[in-house]
Image (tube, rainbow, N blue to C red):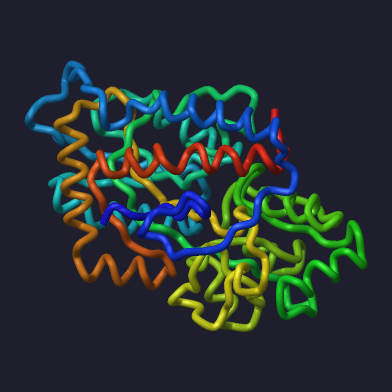
Length: 361
């Protein structure tokens, strides 16, 4: 169970094959620059590989008090829901309460920074989507943390599936129809996201550049408030998790147009992928897991215990079924496997973000 990332052209055997077009904005010079970025990113990844010295107060009796899992987004979204399922499953295995703490804002930076700078004693963990530990390295000129050196992997928990959905007032049935509708009415359509630089924002920017569109971007502090505004028609479209959007889709309050990734989702088998609709650009194919991480200097013994307990929890049929009901694909690998997956995913993600040209202060 070491899978979780699907990397388009760089996909391994765990991902379904797909044909991916090159980025239209990336010329030879850019490819050379990005190759250098990729090499730099790859060489700066000690997570799960370096030995961590045990800080004072961390001994064989860990855990001796409650453990908290920091989530970078508001309560009610897919990451928050998954964190609460994981906390419920880990608590009896660790013999201590596992508490979820939401630290939302700034595209995941606030929560990630809080977790990265917490005491390296194993009592503060981070459940993170790929953006704050991958895309943010390109999006922001300065970050208060570096995920490659300040954090280390515990386990990949599950790969969420994301779907392009529109408000029913947008009378289209596929992605091509959406493109033509937006082109005919420039500046009239808004795309919601759960933060600047996140997957829906990257896709919105890519769409504008690729197809000559003018769409608006509206950033929220989490997926749940974004979904409420989408259902209300305040924004007209998004790429959001199936966990959050499927209930609205099934109730007819939203319409699904295309599935991101390389395969259809079991929870929405009738919704074709972008590639099936003829849109093979890599930005629509890349997927990554929600991962459990810890501060970099948490002792190896604690990381290994957490990894084993997490893997065991994710082998339980009940938890796997509950994750699958969210439209996500459960994983549950060990720390070294998760670190290796991240090492391979990071340069691909950075290249895609670089190609969009999106930069944030």
